[in-house]
Amino acid sequence: MGKINRKIKFPGKQVLKKLNTRGKILEKLIPYGRQFIDEHDIQAVIEVLRSDLITQGPKTAEFESALCDFTNAGFAVAVNSGTSALHIACMAANIGEGDEVITSPITFVASANCVVYCGGKPVFADIDPKTYNISPEEIEKKINKRTKAVIPVHFAGQSCDMETIQQIVKKAEKKYGHKIFIIEDACHALGSQYKKNKVGSCVFSDMVIMSFHPVKHITTGEGGVVLTNSNELNKKLTMFRSHGITSEPEEILSRDLAFTSLNNPNPWYYEQQTLGYNYRITNIQAALGLSQLEKLSMFSTQRRAIVDKYNTAFKGLESLQIPFELESCNSNFHLYVILFDFAAMGLDRAQLMLLFREKGFNTQVHYIPVHLQYYYRKNFNTDWGDCPNAEDYYKKCLSIPLYPTMDQEDIEMVIKAVVHQASQ
Ligand SMILES: Cc1ncc(COP(=O)(O)O)c(C=O)c1O
Image 1 (cartoon, rainbow, N blue to C red):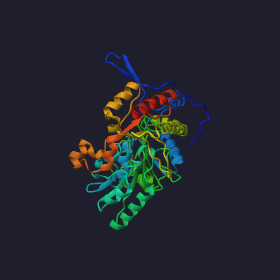
Image 2 (image 1 turned 120 degrees about the horizontal axis):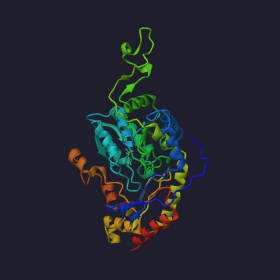
Image 3 (image 1 turned 90 degrees about the horizontal axis):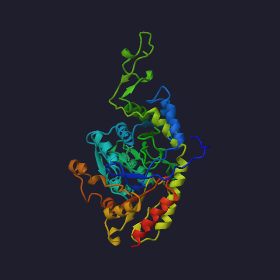
Image 4 (image 1 turned 45 degrees about the horizontal axis):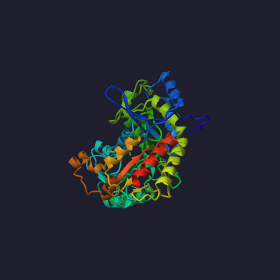
């Protein structure tokens, strides 16, 4: 990844404008997360727009190669969203009817939906109440002969206990006599480290997923990637990204259609070998991703500085709990989640969110436990009581603003409001 040798200029205050029906600004709110796009990003996109190739092309390959360099993964398959990345990863892991896949309830629904797209059944293993990540012990309880994969989610940026998860999975593979894939959902964790390995290196897994949605560490508008060290998985993922088609002469199966009588490949020939999708990322998005990746270390420094300020300001306040950080991980903090003791504060979460809005900033709940979503309760018979730690976490959690371009005034406003409410 190239070093930045130009000065990055931060924009002025970034706010959401709440408008009335006639477009009049009613209030200005800072969001809980947002992208940072500078002139360099814009120029990178313009350059592609002026070129001949705007769909998948050389910038995609360059972006993939930069992601491999950054994470130390062997292969990268960039796609049009983190959700698509999860879907093709489940396809590459051969998830199908009758298969179970264990994941966390504290995640975005996409981490479980990808299993359902393939006809499999998501199984929710409860979280560790300290880290809010999936608990390895709970995985061990849920793993059985039908388990085909585990999707640990590195919540808010802090890595799951991957070494223990890998040991549990290896033990189960031996016991049940089949491969169990580990697919890390690292949509929150680009730039994080676990036991000195970059998240994305696939040291403890078969595949790692990232998302480039605007609230994430870097953005391509919409976008995602699957990282892997397996040549075989890379080939499958590449095909699933584009309709199940290959044009590589050495991979062709229908030789009668592909080759001339002199055994030369027909120049027009492409071959659909399996069922895939159009999940391609464009050259335009990849150019933006490359330019964003150059700024990742600056983004991480900024995020860490804000987290340090929050930690210092909120430490010792009895009616809230700040994020717990494991020594074995270095989180790139996608989110800053506070657990509030609403009963002690004498108000509920909706009231607190409203009070914070009145002070000038938005907050968000990450997440409604997936097993409590209507769809899962209706179709997979999940309910309250399935994952008590996740449910307890859900009742208290609130994410406050965290993004690299928050200025001192924004940070102080948030701190002042949180300290005020928590000290009532
Ligand atoms: C943990 C997690 N997994 C998957 C996704 C899906 O990524 P995308 O929005 O790029 O499809 C998200 C995005 O919000 C996420 O937070």
